[in-house]
Length: 258
View 1 (cartoon, rainbow, N blue to C red):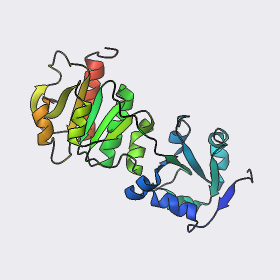
View 2: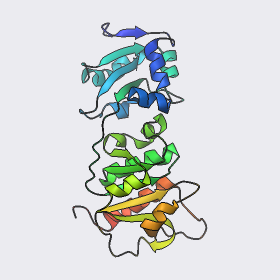
View 3: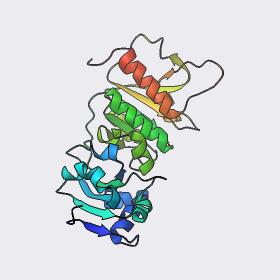
View 4: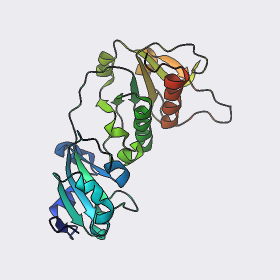
């Protein structure tokens, strides 16, 4: 093991306390940092992403050395198992995590948009971010949603957080950004998405809150579309609904490149 790195063995260490506090939204936003955890996330982290520090479990140094070798300009700390467990947001820590700078987001929107209208579940938020990245929908507008930099959202996004931009907006400000977009919203009793002959581009697709559904604001400005149900169940969760609809629009209706 390379001895050039500082070794941290106390949970009370200020750097450890800083990582632990980044689980809190207010602290994340005040510091302008969030935590990314796990080998699969960190081995492919984009070059333009500003990593402020790596924390690696001492016993797993060799396992993750290839990641550290590619990030020698960053601060790197070695920690013992109890310290990693204290910093980690998972039951079984992977042994490596990093603090990452929250970058400024360009508010110019080009192309199609996914709109999250009050999505509160981190798993749903992360799933939608991941699906948008997979479908090439690079713009997400979040209105009164769970924080997209929370550890659970970051994990559920599976690296998608680095492939999209998320703008936190009010309904009024969102509409100003969508003046050239055709707005479609997922809700019951709308037009069957599989029966629609075309989607007007660029589109903005809205999914509502898990329990309350679509807000009145978006009901009034959107074309309502629906996913068909067999009758044995009334609805899908927000993450599945948005993912299914995006795949049908992007790939099923062959709008790629249009």
